[in-house]
Image 1: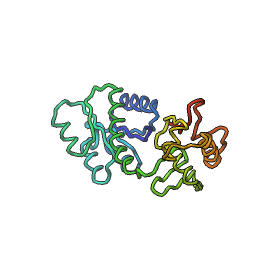
Image 2: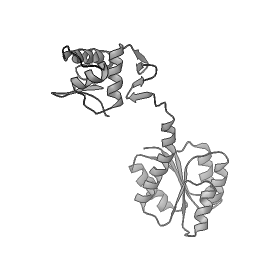
Image 3: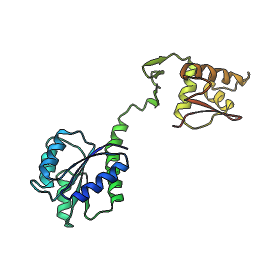
Image 4: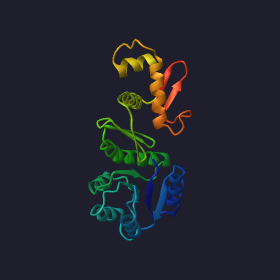
Length: 230
C-alpha cells in the first residue's frame, strides 16, 4: 500500500521520526515545519495522505485544512497535543479523515494511515468492471468473451475460453479432469479424459510465453490443473 505522504508538524524530532518510520513501510514522505509551508506543498504536490498537526506556527492546522478543503479531498489525519473533544470534532467537521492525540504510538499511527488509505481506495476498486478478471498482464472480459495479454488480443475457441474463465474465476483451486469435463463440457463425457489435456496444452500455447514453464495455468501432478493465485 505504498504511497506519497506529507507530514506537517513544527516539532523536528516528531517529523524526523515519522518520516523514518513511514519510509520503512515503503511510503515516500515529504515534510513541512509550519502551516504555510505545509499548505503550499499540499496545494502543489500530489499526495495520497497528509498528516497535519493542529498547533503550527504561521497558520494553524485547522486553517491549513480549511483552505485545503476548498481545493482538494486528499485524506488528512490530524495530530493534536490537546485532549479536548471539541478540537477533535472541529477537525472532523473541517474535513479531516481521522485524528490522533499526542503523544501517540507510532505503530498505531501507521495503522491509522493505512486504514484511511484503504477506505479511500476500496470504493475505487469497486468501480472496476466486475465482468473483467485481471491477472498480471492478462485481462479476461467475461461478457465479451475476449482475452488480452498486454496489448495483444488472444484468439481462443469457445471451450478454451470457458476453461480459462473457469480457472481465472477460481484462482488457486485445483480442478480434476473429471470436474473440468463436467463443468465445461456440461455432460458426462464418454471419451478419453486426455481431451482435457489437449485443450489445456492448446490454451497454454496461446497464453503462455513459455508453455513448458507456465505463468498462468499450472499442473498439480496426479490431481489436475489450477490458475495462478498470485
